Image (cartoon, rainbow, N blue to C red; front, side, top):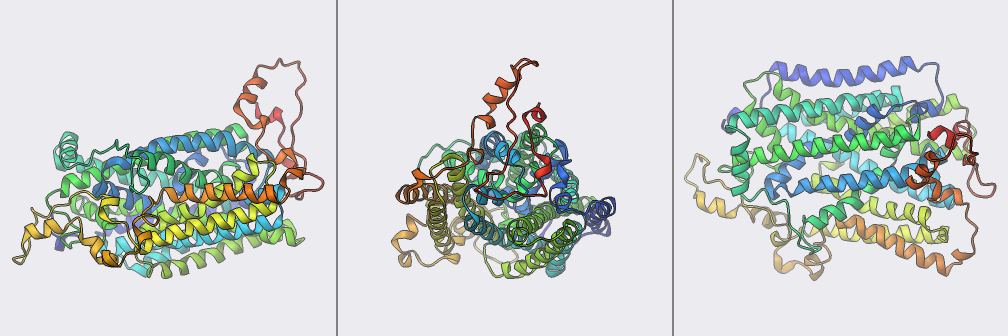
Length: 606
């Protein structure tokens, strides 16, 4: 392998490939801006006028949260903790089934542009605004981290200018979101997911060749303890076990795919409910493909650097730089290919940032501005574009703040767990519990949010001890050091050095640090969801929830279940089928004139 001084500079062809990806993304936005000049409604801009088919939406769903955090962070996680991360394949399958068969039918039937519009229909406007504000805060924080994290890693490893990379990323996303709306985002995501897979495949193929075959990689991983797929320890303080990943991961990703506006906005943009469901199931294949590539890349990382870890030998400053370091190491003699991986990492960032900007614009216009004004559709369309530009600039500014947040990757993972859990609990109260009333929803959400924040922020301050997170051994025995450093002592320090430098001395840790704050980050979502639901039930019952009269259209019901669909398919053609078109309740919520012309009947589902 090359030494550290030989790694870190791109050839002109690498820059050409990287720039080409950004240019194509911008061109897509320009195309849809001109193609849609006669379609100036906010519906066309924010939902694609429900004209999308399953395949591009599925690719967009996959790309939306497969950011550079995934491309850079997942292989590094496998390198440090083992291939147990691959168990997320089970979580992804459960999440897609839950979202396709429970959340999607209700949101599609109600024909809403914003998931938070549902909260007003089911509860009241206060709940809607509260949910919207929490979502906006969540996405701004997350998007700023997503912009900053890959820029930092690629700057330190490849020599990219940090601030230039951050600003360029944010501006390109803002540009094609502001011009082209959701269609531009979906088609750009479809292009970017192909680039992401191409970058991974290039690394995998070259890594297998360099190591002399896949068998060598698997042997190295096995003897290095990296093939640790099955750990059934039920202890909730363990970072990753089968149960934390399957149960905690299912709650975490259901909060993203089930109620997060960035994802819901995509599958309700499909032309039919069948196409929307198909987009989710096709997306599952994409999630599995990205996960498999990321896990295999992590095993290649270990096989290549098992005797000389670049992190503990100080050749890189953070584990998240391992993948760019590997690419520049094994692919430096192939002009353009390292640039393809840079494009791969930035494609993940572009897709996530564009999804966030478009979703932030959608919820702001639909949930905060539109209900309070009587603006024309043309003005709402221009306002949507203006909000996309505003949030793009705001997220770029947030990425500057993120540069002072320390462990940005862990922060990114924790945000969705801490905020997504209570929001998932809130929507669960509305969909499944008819006696839950607005006071119960508000108090439940606030208490659940406070509890998950307490645990999550505490975990950031007091990092769990090695016996909780259980990092695997990293060796520097095969490294060449320019001085006479005792290599053995360096190797022995590998598993403890990070903990002694980022947290207070063990004697200074409060009792909560080793119990409450050491809870697996995947359980933050379960904590927020359960606390929100339990408190919401108690408050609703104490405040007379049993006495309220709820419109059954706003609940998950028989018409939304797959069993009901099967019974409809068995009905004879001459039989009369009841029309289940949604009509606004006369006393609860409001009519949305933008979408009322698209009421869905059962005949359209066939």
